[in-house]
Length: 191
Picture 1: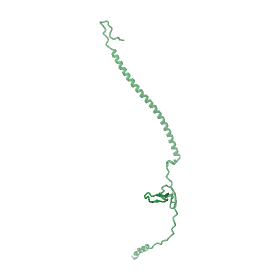
Picture 2 (picture 1 turned 90 degrees about the horizontal axis):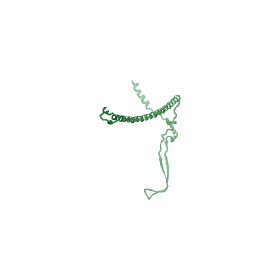
Picture 3 (picture 1 turned 90 degrees about the vertical axis):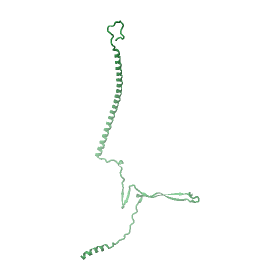
Picture 4 (picture 1 turned 120 degrees about the horizontal axis):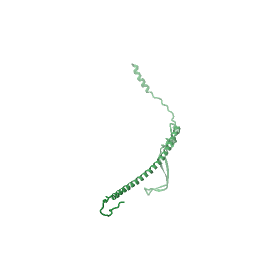
């Protein structure tokens, strides 16, 4: 039983030892070219001649140079060469499919040729259909004109039939009596 009590003491003594630290001289990191990561600051110098201070007429400024930051530094977000862990990576921008030639193999070439032939055939059928449509429209206009002329002629025939019927009813009058006591001719002469 006494041996079991000593085991935790061994673990405590093992944890209490301090590791030895060895100091190595620090090597400076290699200089990094930041021109591919950040755009530099743009500073412009302005040479100003003598002038009177606009806030105070009693103060005159002598000629001097004024430095102005035109553009602050900012990140370069364009893909390109970047350094990571000392390894240079070349990033390629994504390709736009509209400007890349399509892959060509026998199956694609056969399909393109089949599509061209189908397009030519459709265009020829469209021309034939267009010609047939123009003939149909011409025939339709002619039929329309004939229908109008037929309607005019039918109206004229009906009018002539009415006039003919009216003439026949006038012409057919009762015949004069067969035995006339007078020698006078009848009122109307029959032709």
